[in-house]
Structure formats: C-alpha cells, structure tokens
Image (cartoon, rainbow, N blue to C red; front, side, top):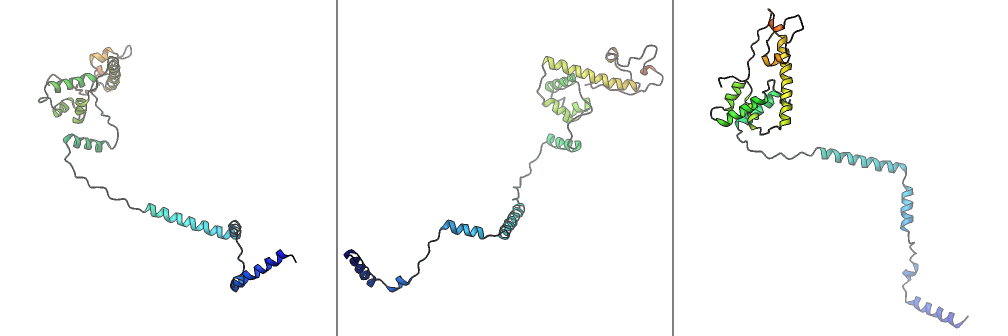
Amino acid sequence: MSCSSCSRRTLGLFIRSFTPLDLHLAPRTAISNPLQSSRSFSSSRGPRQVEDALTSFEYTRREYTQDSQSVRSFPERERKPTERERWQIEKAALKAKLGGEAWNPRKKLSPDAMEGIRHLHETSPDRFTTPILAEHFKVSPDAIRRILKSKWKPSDEEQEERLKRWDKRGEKIWSNLVELGVKPPKKWREMGVGRAAPGSRPTWKSDTRNTVTVQDSFSEDL
C-alpha cells in the first residue's frame, strides 16, 4: 500500500469519527425527473378519466350559460312625461291609423296647387291657416303641414318631369271617370280622353250616362 492511500484512509476514519451515525444510516432519496413523472401520470390516465373530465367541463359551461341568460337587466330611468304639441299628437294619431304603412294619401294635389297653398299662407297666415286650407282643399291638416314645411324647389327639368307625371295621372283618372259616364274637361278631351271610336258616341254623351259630381280642388270662393 502506498503512503498516499494510507493517509487518505486515515483522514477518512478521522472525519467519520466526528459524523453522527444517523446520517450514515439514512437512505438515499432518488432524484425524480419531472418530465418522467408527468409522462407516467399522463400515461396512467385512462379513457374513462378523460370522459369524466369532459363531462364535468360541459356541465360547468351549461351552468354558466344559464346563469348569464338569467341575469336581470336594470330598470331604465323613468322619464318625466312632457307635454306634446298639437302636431305631435296628430302625427301619432295618423301613424296609429295607418298601422305602420307608408304615407300614401288617396288624394294628391298638383304642383300648382301646392305652390298656391304656400303663397296663400305666406301672404296672409292669419287668414289662411292650416285648418282652413285643409278644409278647402279636402285634405288632412297633416298634408297641409307637410306642404308648408317643405322648402324644396324643383329645377326646370324636374318641374317639367313632374308636370308630365301629373298629366299621366290625370289622364288615368279621367279615363276611369269616362267609363262611369262623366264628361271630362276640355283639356283632357283635347288630349284624347273619352274619345269614342268612329261612328259611335262617347259614353258621357249617352242617355244612360252616370251623373257623378266632381269637384275641383280650387274655386273662386277662397
């Protein structure tokens, strides 16, 4: 045996004499690898455990959805009722009467009549009020109010197109009235409304003509 090994052995015996006996008898703890432990745990889980986990997640999600749907909304702040103007009351009544349909009056005024209404109301608003104009032109007060409120003025091309559309509308109306035996005005007769076939009399010249009173929207009494 060499001297170096003897000195090393002697030093080891000397240090061991100062070390407690419990430390020598304590078993060694194996250092576990976290990757290996997680791998073994995941491999130990069977399909039954995975199915239970999915079922629990689905149940939790369903409860959360039901709770979110059952949340009550906070009541809105109560607004103080304000007094409405007369035109607002009439507009609400007209909206309820129409039942949500678009505004489409059966009687429509010509562009010249609407310009006359604006001119009369502008020159003498105290005399030609909305109710008086509505009663004379046989339309609703809301229609007169819309005409007076509108500030739109058509251009020359638009005005000409409106007059053409108005003439077509009048021609259609008077053609229907001629079938009832009503004599059309001279303007519409010159345009060919009520013209009979050669060798026959017009309907409005027959003995069985229907006497239907047709009133114009404008008169000299206004």
